[in-house]
Amino acid sequence: DGGITQSPKYLFRKEGQNVTLSCEQNLNHDAMYWYRQDPGQGLRLIYYSQIVNDFQKGDIAEGYSVSREKKESFPLTVTSAQKNPTAFYLCASSRLAGVFDNEQFFGPGTRLTVL
Amino acid sequence: GENVEQHPSTLSVQEGDSAVIKCTYSDSASNYFPWYKQELGKRPQLIIDIRSNVGEKKDQRIAVTLNKTAKHFSLHITETQPEDSAVYFCAASKASGGYQKVTFGTGTKLQVIP
Image (cartoon, rainbow over all chains, first blue to last red; front, side, top):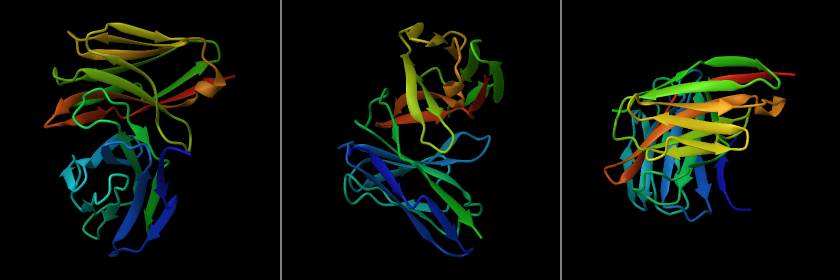
């Protein structure tokens, strides 16, 4: 079953704790992305990666960190420095890096709630 | 940076009627405009896209138009059905610094009333 997966589906975190969201793809896509989705605000880019061991900050990277040690994996850590982390997080991938017209394939998302 | 505005934020239509969602963008370098549909509790999925060298594209009941001069593009759904009910996102994309920079609109919640 090919595609992009995220885990867990729901995540609860206490204030002051770091938490890591998993994103895996078996599509052999070069580029991977993390977006945050809040009601009425669309999808905002957190981080993106074009290649293994390389990643760049998106529009709202503060309080987040990522790694890209394997082509198929792009985990996102939400740190305690993120002031308002409760949101729906979407991971996406696209086939080629640096191409303007790639379709982005999305994972099912992780809903993070800070208690 | 790019700014994409999307209207309306909510839209209710009777089954069988047409629905139109409009978006504007600010960066003239954007040259690819995808539309994604997100059903309740599901992931966004691409439904149609258009490149800047094309003015209109149609796929069965859905069509997209692009006016590069005015920097706006629209999604048209004809003969709407209840399964069209979802949130629709427009986006503007360009190649920037060696990667694909995609900026999304804020979404339109479409409700098709049977």
